[in-house]
Length: 136
Image (cartoon, rainbow, N blue to C red; front, side, top):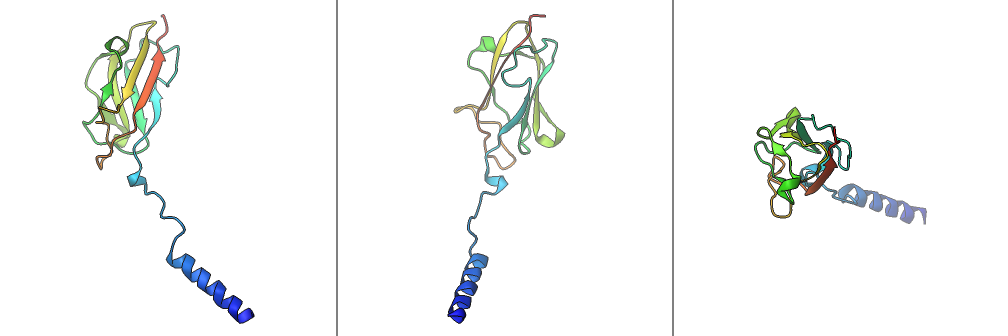
């Protein structure tokens, strides 16, 4: 019985070594995601003097490719320059001008517009950023 048991154990070990339990997902196959924004999502007292929106992704993104989108033009800030990536392509910066006491809604990609892409061309998951400026 111990000999059969030992053979069974060796067979199981060989099976585990040859065939991993899970292939798992490679980071390169995962869609980019927004991990941080400035202003932060849901903020209600953003200083109107702030001159930019920043969106940080979980992986480097394709340069000169973005979809800053809106639901309604009246809830989108006035652009004060062209978007650009900083810090190794993970953070996109949009220079803007704010109005005091306004609620803003900005989409980072949408179901229709998907130009925020990683370096392999995979589109970022759509992300809705909402916040309000203070009345200063």
